[in-house]
Amino acid sequence: MLTCVAGFYPVTVTYLSLFYTRFEFGRRLSLFYGQAAMGGALGGIISYLVFSHFGDQTGEANASTWRPWQVLFLIEGTLTMIIAVAGYFVLPHSVETAWFLTPAERRYASTRVLRDRDMQNTSAATQQADVNNEQEHDEESRGLLDSSKTPASARRDRASLDDRGVTPRDIFTSLSNGYIWHILVCNILSAVPVYAFSVFLPLVLAPLTKKSNPALVNLLTAPPHLCGAITLYFVARYSDKHRVRLGPVLFGLAVMVTGLVIVVVLPTSWAIPRYLSLNILLSGTYVASPLTVAWISGNTPSPGKRALLLGINGWGNFAGVIAAILFRPKYAESGYIVPFWWTLASVAISALGFILLRRRLQAENARRRGILSRWSEEAVALEEQEGAGPLAQEKQWARRIIGIAKSNRRLAWLAEWLESAIQGGREGDEKITFVFGL
Image (tube, rainbow, N blue to C red; front, side, top):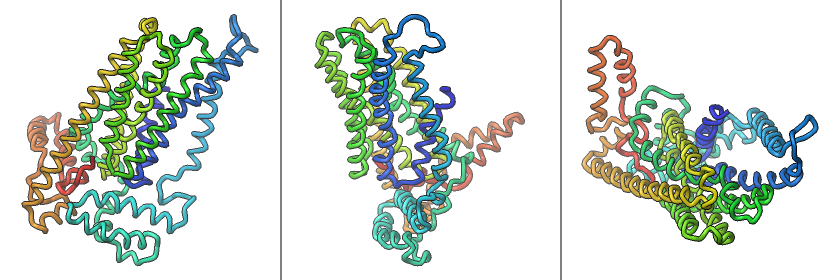
């Protein structure tokens, strides 16, 4: 079961990225990811109703007796399977096959995504020219103008935005991408509260009630998750409107740190204040992950590479293992103070990591601007179109590995694979003209 579920989130994110521009994607993704929070809230209410109705039974179960957990599994599992089967037949493969759009709307939807990605793949000077062409391109996308008037930059990169599958180059550049491994560590640490409180929140709330009533405890889990869903939506909306990602991520982490500090400082006997602090904590818990995914998607034009990077980022689920280790039953009597301290440390380190990531991206953008300022217009245009500007090709270490592999007959396949992976000019975010979003 866990193996089947593991790929669901990254594949869904990749699917959604085919339909929306970079700065529409955050709010749409928040609606999807926020369902985890809404699911926690709705699950708490359903659990309350189920435990209230079936929780009075005692003794061994028999053929006519349903346990609460059995009813929950039946309800949630059945609904999931019904929706999954219906989704397979209803959801389109891509925007070009969207049955609910007219041909003109499909053409407009595909070309606007194309234009958005193309604009990020150009230097600052040509970006302004593309902005000036935006209104004309919108009209052409709606079928009002002849396709021959489409901006050259949009037609130029159409092939690079097609779903061509995963190539050796995509695999190589994904695994050698230093930013994704940096993000993955930050993502794991920031997601510890997500998994901890998605699973263990009823256990954390149990000591706050005078009587350990399973129905009441499950009902109390609904408001914190609802706070998380609402906060995520408005932060993602702000992120899209102002075209920033890392700032809102840091805001969410700051809210989490605030809630965690209050939880560990307040005495365990203060039930209501600690419960309110958990609402603050959950308000920031769901922000970092979807906006991080939106950053990866928006900064990776190549479809194959984008899918691989989102898959690597999916290893952030390892946070669930950390959460399970931290929130053990032996800490229940102390109100889980020790796990809260460790969770606070994880979130704080993650925040520092995102600050460092932001500075790395700013430095890289400045480095690329400096390089482009020394190039001629022809060289800049060559880099935009083919990724073959006058800069010497990088990945020299890969060429050294190829030389070593060629000297060993058993490693000849590795040399051949690496040669196919690094041949050609720079693509997507590797181009010097590409500007990383923040």
